Structure formats: C-alpha cells, structure tokens
Amino acid sequence: MNYYIVLKKENNSFLFLLILIPIVFVILGTVSSNFVFTFTILLASAQIENDNRTASGEKGFLYVGNAKSNNISVLDLATNKAIKNITVGRGTHDIKISDDQQTVYTTDIDSGTVSIANATSNTLTDQINTDVAVHGVAEFNDTLYVGDVYGGKVLVIKDNAIKDEIKVGSGPEYVEARPPDGKILYVANLWSPISVVDLTQSRVIKSIDSGATPHGLSFTKDGSRLFIVNMHSDTLSVIDAQKHEIIKTIPVGKNPEYVKLSPDERFAYVTNLGEDTVSKIDLRNLEVIKSKIPVGKGPHGIAFSEDGEIAYISNMKSNDISAIDTSTDKVIATIPGGGIEPHQIVMKKALSSNS
Image: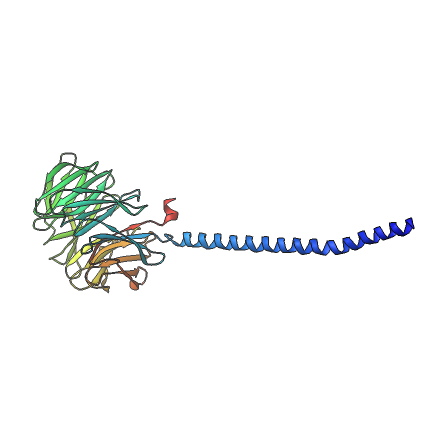
C-alpha cells in the first residue's frame, strides 16, 4: 500500500511536471515574445524618431527675408519646406546671420526697425527702433552697422542701442565690414560713389566711383578683395580692398542686384534682376563663364550650401527660391519662399556642423 501511494505520488508529480513545464514554456514564450515585440517596437520608434531628427536640419536652414510679408521664413533644406515664419518689422530688406550661427538680423525699411531673432528657437528676441529708413546691415564683433538710406549715414549699434552715426555718401544701402579685422567698412551708396570708412576714426577715408548705383557687395575671406555690382551699369567691379582701388570691371547681366562668393572662393554668382538670370564668374581669371543661367522672376539674394554644391537664389516676383546645382549650373529645384517678395537670404549650417 505504501509503495502504491509513493508510486502514485511520484506519478502525480511526474504528471504535474509534464503539465507544468509546457505551461511555463508557453508563459515564458508569451512573455518573451511580448518583450521582444515591445522592444522591437520601441527600437523602431526610437530609430524613426532619430531618423526624423537627423533628417531635420541635416542640410542646414535658409532664412528668407520677405519684404511684403514682414517676416522671416525658415526653410529646412532637408525637406525644402518652410518650418516657421518669424514676424519682424515692415518692409524686411537685408538679412544677416552672426558668425556663431545663433542670431539673425534684419533691417525693416518701412518700420525703421532692426529685428533680432534667435536662430535656435526661431523667435523674435528684440527690435531696435531707429526712426529712419534702414536698408543694409553688417555684423562684426557684436556690433551692427546699418545704412540709413535717406539720412546719408551709417548707424553703429551695440548692445541693442545706437552708439554712433557716421556720415557717408548719398543713399547708403548695403554695407559690409572687411574681414578679418573689421576695421574698414565699405558702403554701397545708391546716388554716389562707394564710401570707404575707417571705423577706428569713424570717418570716410576714400570714395570709389565703380559705376552707376553700386549695390550688393561681398569680400573674400581674407579681406583682400571686394566684389560689388553696379546696378545701372550692368557690371561687377573687383576692388583691391587694401589699396581701395578698382582692379577690374566685368560686364554681367541686366540690372545686377547682388553678388556672392562660393565657399571655396573659386567662383561667384551675380543675380541679374532685370532679366531673371544669374551670371557665374571664375574668380581665378575674373571672367564670366556662364552669362545667363535662367532662374525665377526677379532674382535678388544668394546663399550657398555649406559644401558649395548648391546655390540658392531668392526670386522677388515669383516668391520662390531657385536651387542651382553649381556643377551643372542648372536649376534642380524650385522651393516656395514662405512669404511674399523674398529679398535677401542667409544660410545656417547643418545641425551636425554646429554641434
């Protein structure tokens, strides 16, 4: 009897184990499957989120000043879409980004304001009232230089306040400080020759007659040369920025508006407002190598991708941005500008470049 009972107990235990083991494996399998499934979903979600984060800003951002919308459009060049509009003053004209890529400045000619935006949060952080018609803006060492078009002077702004005024020529529009020391300021005057300003003395030291209606201007990185378009002479002037003398005058298209050098300084583009084209100049030979690259209507501002492979052109009349492949000089994309009458544009480097 005892043997039978023991045998029965052992058989029951064995049977229990036979039943329990599959249940345990089923439970473990279910838990394991759920765990693996959940982990896989979380991993996939994290990857998607990471991919989205990487895609956003991986090609940089374009900041577009829209004169008739009174705002700055922020275009994500990974998607070629506007991600935000920042409301600024009326009649947004010139736009610049600080060297540290953290701050964007605009001149608002109709409201007489200089708007300051944070380029990380893409929000307006301050606005300086000047009570004059401001057009061009240059930034150097936390100091702004702003052209007072009808006052014939340049405003010197520091700590968000006007600290000085420098008398220049008639109709100062675009202004640029010469790199790398920022001691010389070039001023393109609508109705008079270029003004060369010594900022250590706060006075004009020379006037250069480059042509009719000098307009957009760009320095080489070392400050040795300045390129400036002459709107009503249909020319581009090359200036020795140390001697303040014209080296060469190059015919370009009709009513050139702006000039910008490629990041490697091998060539420059000029927007020809009067014929809806862009001219390309070889900076080694100082010659036009492509005279009429068709873009949108009313080409104005120019910005290059960080690698120089794409040139972005703002088109005032068609309210869009033409993206030009600089290896073929053909438009590869037309991007909505995000506002009405886009004037100047600036490039913010890709997020990976700022980290």
